[in-house]
Length: 135
Image 1 (spheres, one colour):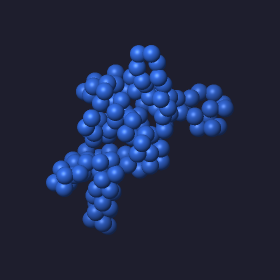
Image 2: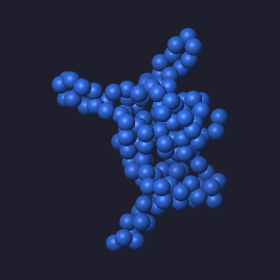
Image 3: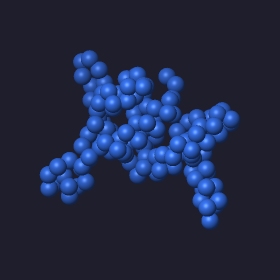
Image 4: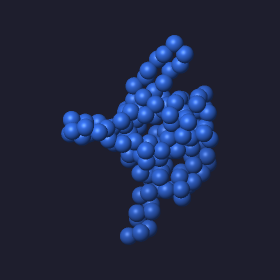
């Protein structure tokens, strides 16, 4: 299956906006974030197929961008996303701007590489250049 960078970005943006701390004193102390299922994410991002969402979440777990656990039922596999990792927040911070994201995708296309690692490096370099220009 092909990696869909736009799907990955949209999932991260959606999680950042919609995940909440679990209520209750003990959960607040431990920083427990409420889990969100890949099925719920797919419902909230109807632009992408459930298969795209599931595959993207899986790849983000492998890349260290998300903490999640796999729930297997008789009918399906569902990921329960627990949180965006610090590495995931770093990646998202670099790609959250539409302008930076478009430059990142354009550069990745020019060099023919669109792995999560490559997208992260490209976006970090773009942000670094923007910082230099603003100083």
